[in-house]
Image (cartoon, rainbow, N blue to C red; front, side):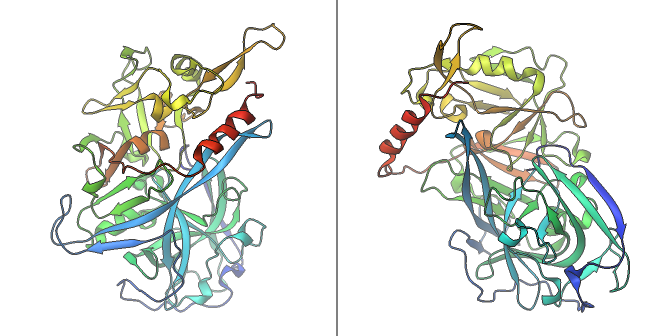
Length: 455
């Protein structure tokens, strides 16, 4: 969602929209967590403790918020060949009756974006929509935070994401992470209420909006940045959040706020400094890239970097390097082969302090595809296992910028410290799960469907 540079456009609109159809009360509220008994989504859970933990101090709190993994099938010639993934949990906004929303926790964007009740498109009508008139704590504002009266002109912004765009206006509101039954930390924050939303990615998934967790540089103003506001609130153990992304059915994804969850680590946590933090990305320096232990001629001038993006499914590769890296990682296969078991080379990103090392089971698509051999040869093709990489173009960040999406973030538990800033990497601890009933049959059906697909 946030893997490309954001294109933010601001304009002044007159008169005020129906998103706030009457003058709002602007009561100042105590920002303690509100836990009213609204329905609890089965996939979203928050737990917190005042007891000291490793990674936390004893004066604040660490909150664990369950994330649901949702997959959207990617088809070729009518057959599923891969999936896009999203990880979302709950937030709730407003007072006295909080409104609960499902949001993607996205390290690659800088704003909380929720659909507005004014948005009447087919996409918006399938989402939870924010109603300012139902909240006594809502304030309509302009970008600079100034209050907007019922008859005043107001600011409106268009925000471009890697795979879509929204247009919306600004509110100041009480925002709490987690569900209303098991709430996490609360802050008074500015956010974007979307009056228009593009089809992609919003119609593909069940989530309502996006909660940006980037550094301040991707936010339009500091009061839109949830990490900064959470730190200033003083209610967290540490200025950290940590991500665990599930790989298998039966695993639970989570985000830890106010520290990290050492139970999710299979080894030590090693830190890498963020480079060019003024851009807002969680961006780390890549010293070199190796395939099977062999150094690639990609980062010879020290220009490579990697952006960690929880809203991206694949590894993003600069366009000019895509073909060569794909060729280096692809291997011939039998049509019925499990590509996660392929004898393929390792892929390493050397970040100075830590080597991010991926095995074939981490980066391969599960099933082989068929590709044509040569330019002629009617019907000539072979089966091949291919990596989950995709071309990206980030000219404002640099021509040699990679994106570390789900492929990396499932292998590594990652921790984001916005006070330094820096990113921690540690091998993720995976539970041993029993085989899923019917899984073999499902894989067999997919293999049968793929046998006639030719790249």
